[in-house]
Image (cartoon, rainbow, N blue to C red):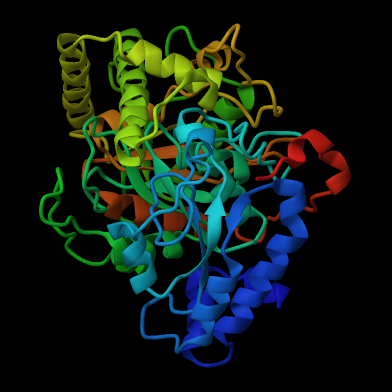
Length: 482
């Protein structure tokens, strides 16, 4: 049964469809795997195994992923009857009364939900070490961070608990953990998936997977705005799954291996980009060093302002929903600090930040007049040791300021709305994954999927697996559960 879990979701679904494997067998195998490795990784924080087994016992249906085990990130994913904490003590007892539109679509595709995965509080930072649940450990080295904020989902996929897991991305939160856990993570275009409320226009939902075809087929099943959604996109000319099977055309690719001013770039991250550029050139693409002209300092200030305002709005929104007064003791130091700063920003300042995002979108659109794809590091650091991004009541922003030094490439696409993907093409001498990012034109996931499939064929990564997850490497303090 372990061999079944090594398959991608598309292959698992095909076995169920041909009745060579029962959905119940897949679910039992995934549960056994979670029970085996989760004590060392702490990726799954809210299991719902009984309901998954009940669903697996029913007829599988005809959805494209009928019978396939799946995990939801514990942030932004209301699932009827399941707690939604966003890894915050403030919400530790909150139970979602109904499914979100996106969760309903996952269920409609046939996915069987096994539980919720770990995330930093409200998804606000680039490592998954919440006080409520304790840290998630990177499967490649359990002393290191899996990234964030979809770190639990990335660790679950990398360790073969499931073939695909939900994530969302407001500043890199799909791509960051994909890069540090050695899996594939695509952030779709703004408006590709349904989202009823999105005042900042930064966050999007999708999945982390081991295969490109899974990511494409899942996006086919979830894409499409609903009436009243703030953003709408025209349907793609053909399914994304077909783009994976199509031959990639010759692309013009600009690549950048230089850090923005005032930021850091680890040599392994720069080397991964240069290696990916050479691979793209060997595959017949036109590749040259190029980057859009950006004022990084102004952009970072605008993005930070919007991030802080978003933290305040998130807390206020949950306060309205639950009727519970938010107090400092119920939140982590960073969260409370960001929210307090967010309340100090004026409406004109936020409008100016939004204007900065729109100017950045114009700059990127101009860059893509010449280049089909922009290739960059996903991050400026290799996976960091757990605890390195910690904050305290005395210095609540210490870890956040460190994040701003190496999460420098991913936020641009949240501001502009463009699609972008982290592709696991490189491992360093220490055996740690180092992802690279490819950015496409607005609404052009098709080009990214086609290129990713070509890269996956040229340099397969699916069979690269972490060797093990020794529980002895995980301290007792990290085993906190609720």
